Length: 97
Image 1 (tube, rainbow, N blue to C red):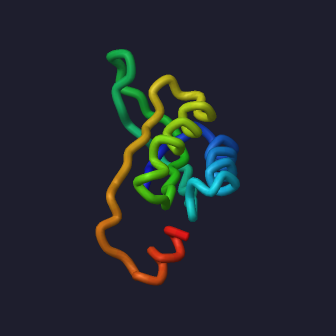
Image 2 (cartoon, helix red, strand yellow):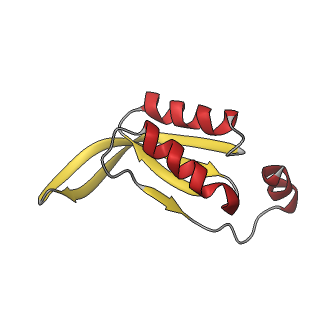
Image 3 (spheres, rainbow, N blue to C red):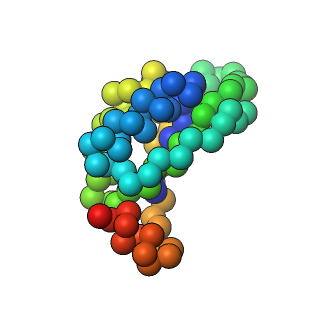
């Protein structure tokens, strides 16, 4: 699973659409708005963001990273991959198809 954030819902939807159309993800979920707190250029920032959960396989990570970097306006977009170690077998089979 890959996690990313965007500054607006339109961008989150665009990234999700590209990933689904290119068969790089089986499912993308958009949650938000959420409130993010972080340090940027030595200042504490608080911003509204949209969180995307991208269900995929390890083999597709590099291409997903490229899509996110090319479509996210952030200079340093959050892109985090988490291994799915367990899950409903029929769901995981569907995801890998």
